[in-house]
Amino acid sequence: MIYDKNIEKLKSLVILLVIGFLSYIYVINTGKSICIFYNIFGIPCPACGMTRAMINLFKFNIREAFRYNPLFIVLFIIPLAFINNKKKLNISIIIIFIAVWIVRMCLMFPDINPMIFNENAVIPIIIKFLKNSF
Image (tube, rainbow, N blue to C red; front, side, top):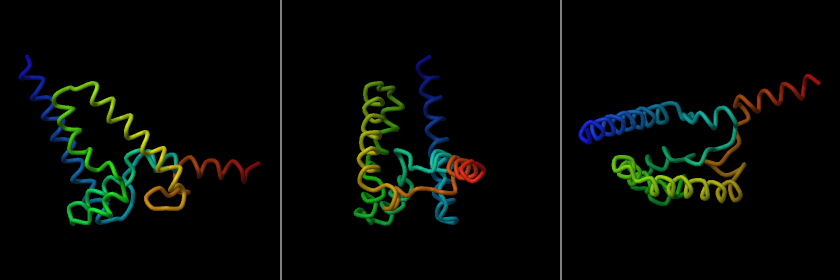
């Protein structure tokens, strides 16, 4: 029974790694955001800049990695917390991401990359359309 749960968690982790790799390829080739939150609401999500941070980490540009998202290091802890089902650690990671996101929004939004406003996102386009209609 425990073995089956671990296999399922491992499968999920492999799927996440594949999605991460495909995201990397997409960002490198298109330069566009893969973030659903950003593309719908127009504001960066708590993990915004993570792909670019990891790309810079792999290029050994540590300073740039921190600039894009200082929590890129936490990505190495998340799989361990997920596999071991550490609920308190998972909740702590979420709280840390949200807290750092709020600080980054206050300091960087909307002018400093990666915390830039996306005026081409769905919600801003709808708002712009409604303003122009009335």
